[in-house]
Picture 1 (cartoon, each protein chain N blue to C red):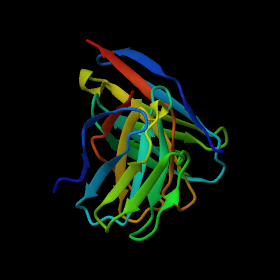
Picture 2 (tube, rainbow over the protein chains, first blue to last red):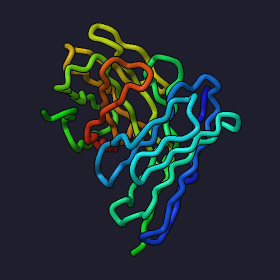
Picture 3 (tube, each protein chain N blue to C red):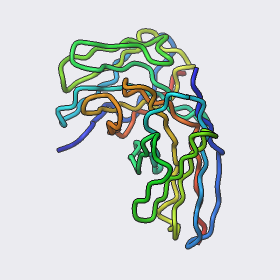
Amino acid sequence: GEDVEQSLFLSVREGDSSVINCTYTDSSSTYLYWYKQEPGAGLQLLTYIFSNMDMKQDQRLTVLLNKKDKHLSLRIADTQTGDSAIYFCADASGNTGKLIFGQGTTLQVKP
Amino acid sequence: NAGVTQTPKFQVLKTGQSMTLQCAQDMNHNSMYWYRQDPGMGLRLIYYSASEGTTDKGEVPNGYNVSRLNKREFSLRLESAAPSQTSVYFCASSEKGGGADTQYFGPGTRLTVL
């Protein structure tokens, strides 16, 4: 089946940029998503990118998509302690609405 | 507007017991989903309901059943709980279930099976 992979942990200093990476195997991906999960909470959609786009920017968030290499990244500028959370990459294949999630990257922001 | 609500928040079961996890959404969404989250494995789809009256298996359906009671409610039943079903369960809903259709998640149910 299709697969989505992420590194498990990233630690940065407050004010630095964070880059969280994701790779996927699905050749028919239509949309790719980034979700954020704070401790003890559900998932909150951060942003998404359509598969025919290379980049999307939304305030402090920049999503880069390399469709040839099936590589997605999320850059958070000026990372704050409130950004500490688990970040999930998810792939929507076709038009079913079903999502395949990566394992999640825990972002630790040190003051 | 509460979004997606789940009950209970926490549950401890003994092996072999049964229980139903409840989920409701007040956003008039057509599609609803049940996921389980295990450490280091992300979220895996158990069952989903594209619209009222329909349900389909996801990636890990064994040991579970679902009921789409009406447009608002989608329940997940464990008939005979096993320790392997210890997990955090999330319900989600989306407007129409396709394309750039944002899924909204509930707060989760933390289930432990002893």
